[in-house]
Length: 152
Image (tube, rainbow, N blue to C red; front, side):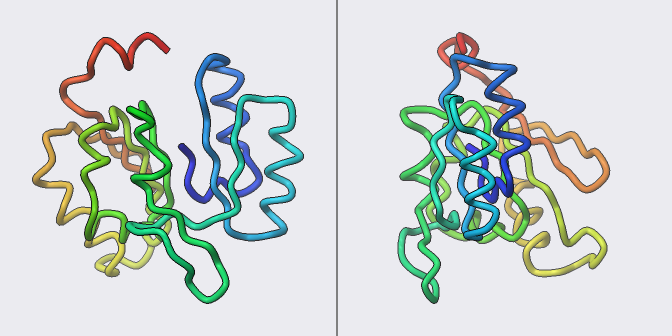
């Protein structure tokens, strides 16, 4: 799953790299969403115009889809999101235990101590996961990955 997929660069990469994978790409911005659909046409990518959130709803006209409804069908190997979706870790985060790899793009890395990154990091210290930091991105890998996830 690629939350905040923008125009689909990551979705296209993963679709070509892993042609049997089911990819879900979410993008709330209408202009970027149209480009996302164009760029992923003909690929195994399900495009959804929505923002990812802990719970489904509507935020001022922008649909919000609960992460638990999107990922982990029944399991997700990889979830990529921008730190703007940092509230995913405040509640309803059981999906994380079923996700092997998490890629967090910390867009607010230039403003240390902002609430979004802080919320992510404060919760991450208690996870049974390994972390790799690369510039403004954190890769979080579950320490135990089941065989069914490696079959993709």
